Image 1 (tube, helix red, strand yellow):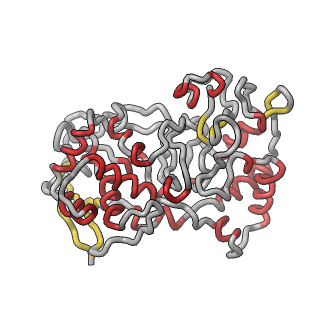
Image 2 (cartoon, rainbow, N blue to C red):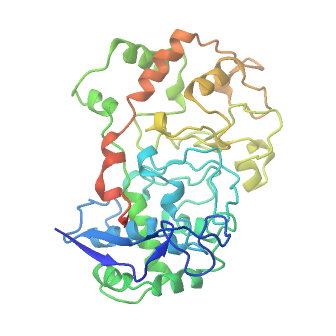
Image 3 (cartoon, rainbow, N blue to C red):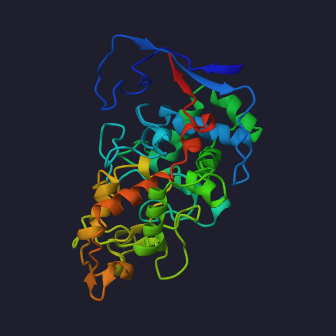
Length: 365
């Protein structure tokens, strides 16, 4: 049986606004029906086997924080609003909407296999501006277009105001002291526990199950003819190797001749890094459309068409995408695209996207 901790009031429209408004765009709209939202947690915590070494109680607290809309300025947006379990903890729009329906500037990437503790140092965000999950998890809350909180004290005060956190912090940290360090630790512990390692391709590599002839054809094209795996390394948990070059894990793939967003180059001011973005992990890639840092490609077929005919000869174009001094035109056939996409579908981890321990614990009735 599950024990339920009840949020203290009836709320309007899914999760009501205690501070400013009742709608996502900040307007004072009303809805005809009231909905009770409850926090439903198992009496014994799920077992997470955190790669960061966190206790199950700490990860459970992080799960609640991840899905709690009260951490945004008007109680409308949670981390889980833009990183949805059913679609590989990504979003299904080019750029996500924030607390007043403001659009972000980049596509929300999937967040599996990010743990520093389990998989070595990580580049986080599209431009790699963070290396630590503990530092990363607070940034969306403080972003004016995402969750809109003005300072770290506001986050702490929001959490302190909610009655269910006292017991959760006591269970996690043996203290009811709610502070920003423990909030970040719990959130990062939950995010770091979201791991994907149970795809059909993983099982096949471990001698379990089989791939169809079409999927094996796609695997061969991916690994051999088109050498996709030289960047997107499916055998590595984070999806790319960090060694080699001055900017390991980042690549310019010739999306544009002139980038509106220069990615790593905009971050570090080095023009040689203009147009370079973090190599995305292809686990669950069939679920995480649209694609690229700006969500410009709606389908995997669109992505393959880019590599087939539309690579732009940017000065920083990766050498693997060049023929001499010119951009490659791979001329991937329709049948080859079908095979490659069939292989990419074997990278879907149905265990991760349905596992209750990663799901939203807030239940609307």
